[in-house]
Image 1 (tube, rainbow, N blue to C red):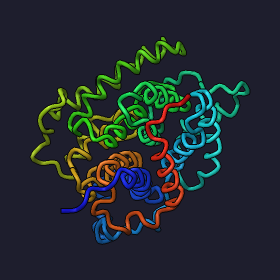
Image 2: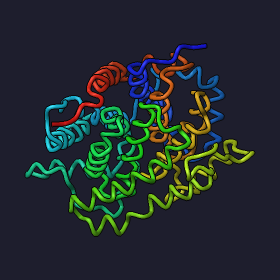
Image 3: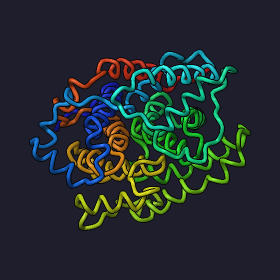
Length: 361
């Protein structure tokens, strides 16, 4: 029986495999923007399957560039600074990372949000409410927040940092609550509780705390509350469909859950027909893939990386959670060892491991 990976190794895998999933789901934009999942699976098969995909040929997308920006801000701020200091560092990193977007297909909402941040001369991290800011760009970069604040006693910090980092570009609850889900599920994976099938129930409870936080902060409260329910309602319907709303039992999948059945399902839970493009369904599809895959990296990729939606974002999120659970268990070295920015991802993972659980002063 294989030895369980150390927590430090799981931190490494969370960051590195997230980048690998992003790169493989992106494929120079060829697979991110391919709307037919069957076409992607046929192309993967023609190459010889997942184990023959050499990640050195697959650059990372904007997702990992921004995930690194979040992680490096958390590390640079350390433990002896204030939340305000952290938010200022996040703003700086998000603006700077836009210089590294050639060929990486950054989203228009992320671009627009950083332009607004750069134009703000007061040093504030908040931008106006955006009624079309519900995309997945906040979720795809927030997994590392769960690495920094993994403990149950740090839930208040995890909520605050995921919400505020998310609405720096995606000031809409459908967008920034995706960041909360991405961070929360990473924290669950790190500490090993609750069981994966109960993560969704945990999210439903934490959403109420997030709502209280937004109300207490007093910024654009009326606009946020007007658009609040869509995220939670969508997740409630999904968890009911899988039979795990109460966090008990095993997830229920259709007998036929092949490529086309998944394509139909991913579109059905999406906002506008592109599975994974929004803040609610990017973590939802990633979670669905994780539930289905168990400890199989190949099945995670089949379900979470290769589909006709926003595949690099769902892949980045799913692979981060999987890595935080299983380390590099049976992952083909070709899939991650020569990943672009692998050393940066490894370095920041080690630093987050050392900072984990420490409070901000």
